[in-house]
Length: 270
Image 1: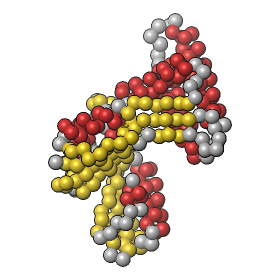
Image 2: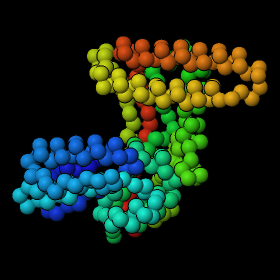
Image 3: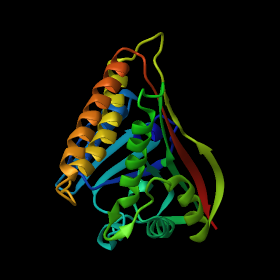
Image 4: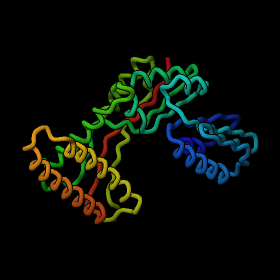
């Protein structure tokens, strides 16, 4: 999202901040952001990096950018007290991982008057694979289990946005004093072009299929409630393996499509 903002005609003095818990992500961000700025003709200097704070300073004409990449937790007061306030906050494929009311309240506290919040790719409870699998009932159960795994997710013991974060976030924003400026679908519609996928598209589909299979495998390999469950689990594990191999082969041969329903929200504090 920071790189997309930099692609705009940004002028004047601008401060951009990226927050993430993973140092690896911040290191990658630092490298890619610097590449974008240099590609746009900015003079990049003052780069500073330590274990929790990475900074880029860039100038071009009358435009001056400061980009801070911080390692921390949005719901940790020690992190947020360092951030300051902002005109705009974005959350990209993020709010489903958070307790929604707490996250919305924290974001509101970080926005200046008339500040806006743009939350993208909020999963909203529907993953569809086309064409329908031969054992359609088995695949439907896999997808229901995939959604339930999101519903089971907890953050500090609290329920997160989960599998219906798109619609739940809409309500949480209203309850925390936001005005909804716009809502729209941001569905993933992944289909082959001229009968085939690129390597990156195959990688993406493999990642989604792997997540679905992993959640089912976790359930199937949990300690059995009764010893007689063992035979049943062996059969289900084979069915799961057959499903995964079949779906991967379909993706690689351009015979699989994926649709994932998601919602974006744009809101302003009132």
